[in-house]
Amino acid sequence: MASPAELPESPCVRNCCLDDADVCIGCGRHVQEILCWGQAGTKEREAILARAAARRDARPPPRFRPVGPG
Image (cartoon, rainbow, N blue to C red):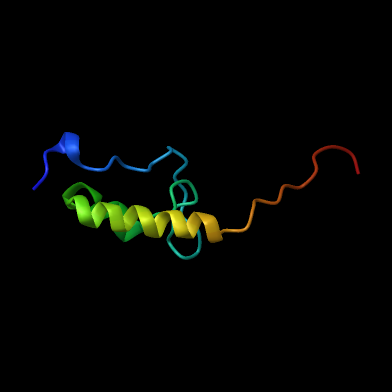
C-alpha cells in the first residue's frame, strides 16, 4: 500500500451537506465513499474522485432566490 503522502488527497471542501441521494453537495462523494475514504488505497481513491467529479459536473448550477423587497 502507498504511504499516506502518496495517496490522493481528500476532495473535502468543508461544505458538508448531503442531498436526497446521500451525496455531499461540497465534494460530490456519496456518504459510503466518505466513510471508506480513510481505508481506501490509491486506485480506490482515484475511482472515488472520478465518480465525485462526474457527479459535481452533472449537478445543475445552484439557483438562488432574490433577496430584498419584491
